[in-house]
Amino acid sequence: MQESGAADGVHGLVVDGLVVDGLVVDGLVHAYAAEPVLADISFALPAGRVGAIVGPSGCGKSTLLALVGGLLTPARGRIAGAFRRPAFVFQDPCLLPWRTARDNIAFGLKALPLGRAERQRRADALREAVGLTAADGDKHPQALSGGMRQRVALARALAIEPDLLLLDEPFAALDVGLRRQMQTLVRRLIDARGLTTLLVTHDLAEAVRMADRIVVLSARPATVAAVREVTLPAAGRHDGAVHAEVSRLVADPAVARALAIDDTAVDLV
Ligand SMILES: Nc1ncnc2c1ncn2[C@@H]1O[C@H](COP(=O)(O)OP(=O)(O)OP(=O)(O)O)[C@@H](O)[C@H]1O
Image (cartoon, rainbow, N blue to C red; front, side, top):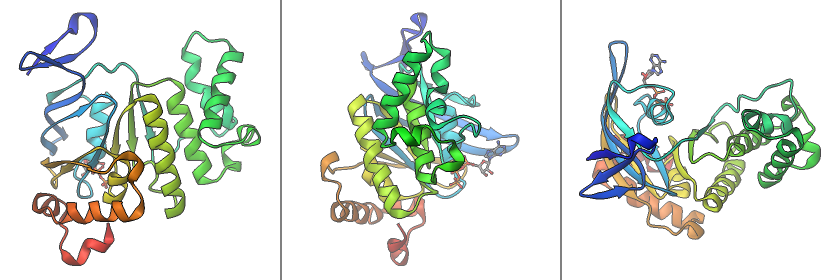
């Protein structure tokens, strides 16, 4: 692989003479001090698709996401893609407690050359898109439920019109019913924007519900144990179909080995 277009700030990759459009992670290695975390990570994600990263606890999933989003610098390897504006959503919504929901959503827009009225207009449109009422928009975070706070965090991430969305266990703190609602909502918002998205999750069913491609990491120091396509159409991810797809994945020896799944653990996913 060779990089192209670096001079104009666009980092496409040329593979066999073709420019690859999307995210390419190539031979990534990372360590914290002397502790190796990622040993050799390579995978690609086509533009506009959703990738999920799954793997055993502590294998380096969040570290990989932070590297892709530019929060950390890899010891070796590279990340390529024509992305200029990544946005993160974490498990903790990290809202400013002294600002209303609407102002939290509008916060990132302060960096753009927009007047206050336009910032508020955009924030209101996103507030509505994530299912919050005008009255919710006037509330401070402590007056919102956990699910509502996560909707604000999502709207804030989308407000900057990112070209890469990075989701780190965004629904892990929500109860099951709410998690399903949020998975459906987020996938709909991603599809409407054609937004390239990488999701870290410990939940294989969530990966199947939301992603087009699943990257399975091994235990630390992590390598890529398997990359699997989700074969369900985005519109057909009802519980039965998701369960069947999860069963197919856990029966896959490379996936099962990496996630340390045996027959007795299938019901846990
Ligand atoms: N800032 C840091 N400094 C030192 N070590 C770190 C740091 N962040 C993470 N680690 C260590 O790196 C390893 C990978 O952590 P990371 O959070 O990336 O894994 P993970 O797969 O996302 O974990 P989990 O499934 O538990 O959420 C862990 O051993 C963790 O303790």
